[in-house]
Amino acid sequence: MIDILIPVLGRPDNAKKVVASIASTISIYDFSVVFICTAGDEPQYEACLKTGARVVVVEGGRSEYPRKMNHAFKRTNREFVLLAADDLEFERGWDYELLLRADETKLGVIGSNDCANPQVMRGEYSTHPLVRRSYVEDRGASADGPGVLCHEGYDHNFTDVEICKLAQRRHEWAFADKARICHLHPGFKGEQKDETYKKGQRQFARDRQRFMKRTRAFR
Image (cartoon, rainbow, N blue to C red; front, side, top):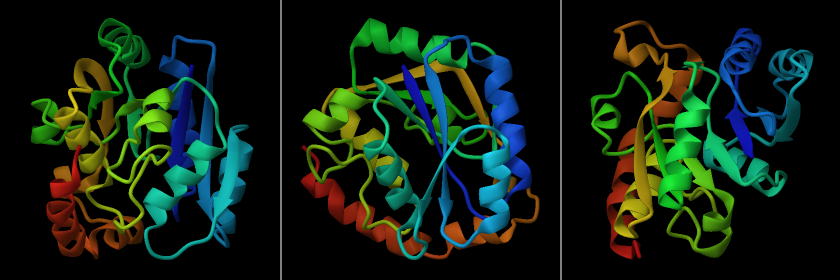
């Protein structure tokens, strides 16, 4: 039913926590947790293996986040994929609410509530959406066309925004307010960011500029 895709880098302590959070809240039987590690990040790789989840490896470098998501998408086969992360706290009912909305609407992208970003909580987009596999295969979740989940031209930022905004343009978007998958990002709490967060923010301006140009191709 759901492949939960979790790209990871340099935070081995989070692996056990996020798997425990999923295991204690998920209500469906047919799911998988897939960690996508960076080649050479051995502490992270070992920590992910110890959880019992599936682990795949991708070479590091530019556009690491979207490449990891695309890599995992091609190696999974369940009806839906959840674009997740290792800094999430899942609340009971998240899967039920997402799948209920997906069943009611038959749409391609269902947004979850990250309990942190004001835009997300208003339903304007989602940092961790549920995406229907057939939608990706038929139309593409990014503006790159059929078969592509994430645009690999982004370094990190706006990957999720493109997926959601494009789905809205196509009338393939719905928001599940009660599906609470809380993002524990330090940026929303004023806490100090670790190196992984810093890496993700370095090309923010460039990613934003690319997103603004790409909106012209949304269809």
